[in-house]
Picture (cartoon, chains in turn cyan, orange):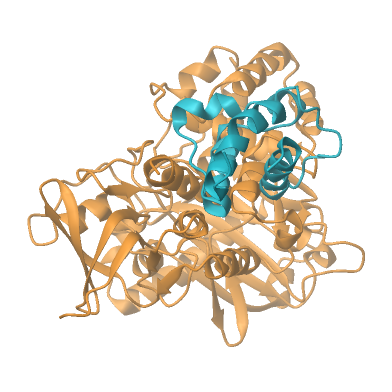
Length: 87
Length: 476
C-alpha cells in the first residue's frame, strides 16, 4: 500500500464518522484536530473502524500517531503491508 | 436447558439509551441482545394507540437542537456516533417557548432556538441582573459537563453567585428542573449546565410524526448492525458469582449468559434484580413523579388563539417549589406543550390539535387507590390541571371553547408510569443519586440511561453511547 492510499483509507473513515466535515482540502501535515471538529470519541471511532474494516490494531499508547494524515500514513502503512505480507 | 444463549453484551431495556448502546456495540461486531419487558420500544419516550390515534409519551420536544453546521454539541456527537444522517430525524424547530410566572403569568420570558432572544428578554425584564446573567452564561459555557468524575456542587449556590433576584433564579430553574431533575429544590451544577445548554443555548425541535420517528431510526440502525432484541421478555434476576454478573434469568424462564450487562432500567431497579431473592433495597429519597393531561382537539390550537407557544413553563406562586407534593398533584406549576406549534414547513400541520399539560405528582397518593376512586380522582385533577394551565395562555373566546373543541382526552398518572416503565415510584428522571461512571456492585454490570445522569432524549442516547464506549469498546 502506498502512503497516499493509506491516507485515503483514513479519509474514507473520517467521511463516514463525520459526514458533516468538509474533507476536500485536508492538509496532510496539519493535525486533523486543528482542521476539523474531531473529539476523543471521534478518534476512538477511527481506531475502531480501522480494526473493523482492515483488521488493524492501534494500541492506546499509539493514538497520538494518528494526529495528522502524514503521521497516520507513516504509522499505518507498515501495518497494512504486514497484513498483506509485504515487507 | 441445553440451548442456553451466550452474548458478548446483554442490554436490559429498549429505551433510547439501551438502543443507542446496542447500536454502538453491534456496529463494532459485538453479539448483542436487548431484552425489553414491554411490547413497545422507547421506555419513557414512547407512544401508544387508543382507537387508532397515536399518543406520544415523554417527548414534548427534543432538546439540544442545533442547526446544521453547528459542531461539537451533544446532537452532533450523537448523530456521528450512531452514524445517523440528521435528515433521518427530520427535525422541525419550535416557534417559541415561554417561562411564565405570577398568578396570571405576569412575568414572562420568551425563548427560541436563537439564544439572543432569551438574553434580550432577560435583560429587558431584569435590567439589574443583566451583568450577572451574562456571567452565569459564561460559567455555563466554560464548564466541563462531560467529565465523568466531577465533584458535585449545588446549582442554586452557583447561580446565586451571579443572579441575585430570586424571581429570575426560579424562572431559570423551572424549565431545567421540569425537563430533567430527579432531585427536589436544587440540582447538581453539572446537571444544571447540561440542561441550560440543552434548552436555552441549543433548543427545541420535533420530528413531524413525533417520537416514533426517532425510535424507527434507532431500530433500523440496530437491526442493520446485526443487533438482536427480545420483546415482552424482561429480566427477572441477575445472578452474581465472585463479584460478576454470571447469568441472567428472563421472565420466560430461560437463562442466558453475557460477558457484559448494561442495564437501562434504573439504579435501584437494577439492584433489585441482583438482589432478587434477597431483601428489598433500602428505600431511597422520595421520587418525583408527574401527571399529564392530553386533549385532542378538532382544530389547530391557533384557531383558539394558541398558535404561538410551543412549550410554556408556568408557576403561579411567589417561589417555585419543585418538590414532591403532599397532595396527589401540585397544579401551581407545570409545563404546557402544544406540539402543533413547531414549524413543520409551509402548509404542513398536524392532523389534529394537541394540548398537553404536565404537573408534579405524588406516587404514593395514587398507587393504592381502588379503581373507582382512581378514576374519579383522575377526572377531578384533569379539570384542575387544565384550569391552572389555561391562566398562562391567551384567554379563549368563551369559557367552554376548549371543551367544545375537544375530541377526546387521556391522562397519565404516576401509577401509569410505574406500570409501563417499571420505574419505582413512577419516577421519570430516575433516582436522586446518579452514577456518572455507570458502575454497580458487580464488575461487568453497568448502568446507562437516566440513573447514569445524562438527561433528556439526546442525553439518554449519549448515555448509552458513552457507557458502551467506556466500559466495553475502549477496552477492545
